[in-house]
Image (tube, rainbow, N blue to C red):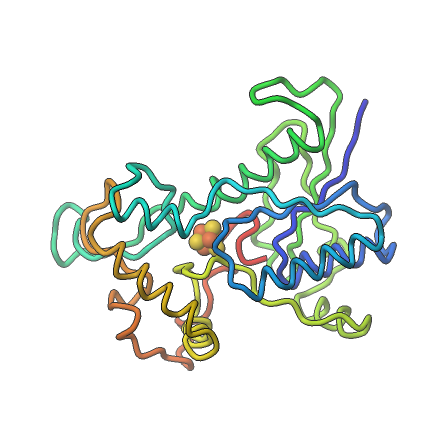
Length: 277
Ligand code: SF4
């Protein structure tokens, strides 16, 4: 029987803490490697953090692989301009279009997480860890333990693996660690606080996150404003008007409400896989 252990790395607070704790020997074993599913659309600060983490891991002779299914930002731009006729949409907000009623509103079904993150990690496990070719069967007796960085306060996101040979494990929950505990552990060990990991244009952003991008990163703000305009009426197979912000207004016209409780990030309840971890 062959068994492997892999970390699903989102490069946010929880999975960064889990990886560093593993390198500090705080779990029962050190995994074989970590895999970061790169949508190509993370903010600059996340890529900087990932480079730092790769450096730290490298000092322990531990490998972090970047797995990529494409560049979601670029793929969306191409879909909006008619160069692609299929796209795994993020859960963008839509006005009209539902049963063709102009007043109807809703959100697109989220397909991005599966295609750009979950399946991407599975492919990397098969190819890099198990050395399999596409569609080649996994050898009988192969077991992969996949560590997922979900903390106690996000326990509702725990889900078993859909693959017979992969067993999910949540080491932070085993240690009863919350997100705050992770931050405390990082600080105690002299590590910096990781940035929040999510695509730059993710419609699950809270108003506080949108405001932060607007105020702190003019170049990235320009990119999301342009994407918001580009997707309005031209995504393949989508009727109605599409928006990044739940107010169904152009992003650069939204007055962000930083105090209303509805404006919390929706990751805790709605994102699965690695998104927001
Ligand atoms: S962060 Fe948001 S946009 Fe990116 S893959 Fe996850 S749900 Fe989709």
